[in-house]
Length: 146
Ligand code: RB5
Image 1 (cartoon, rainbow, N blue to C red):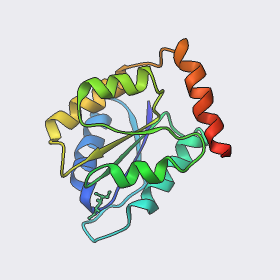
Image 2: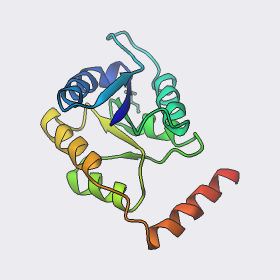
Image 3: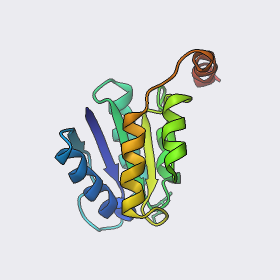
């Protein structure tokens, strides 16, 4: 898969380790930054990843900040983005199956590297179930025009 990754300083270390792991699994990873520990603003990276995913330039986005929350709030302002903050494996699977999430948001200050890797694996392995969930996604898409 082609995966866009981004982080602020608060998520840099976890993003780098997850990106390296994804590459070792054979995925193509495009890291939009940040690439150093200097304090920076998570919206700048959320928009880069979200816009690229919404434009079809990648299969999924992976955004990491201190909590995952700020990244998700920003990415979800981009039409077509369904960003989910995930801290457990069940939710990683369910948000793909039910919500067709296309951006995974993680918090480096919340979730350990080992669990984060399991979450990424579960997110990428799961597929949208469609069916009754498709109508709900259509209603979600309608909210873009509100
Ligand atoms: C940066 O200190 C921190 O606020 C940021 O990484 C993130 O947790 C915001 O949601």
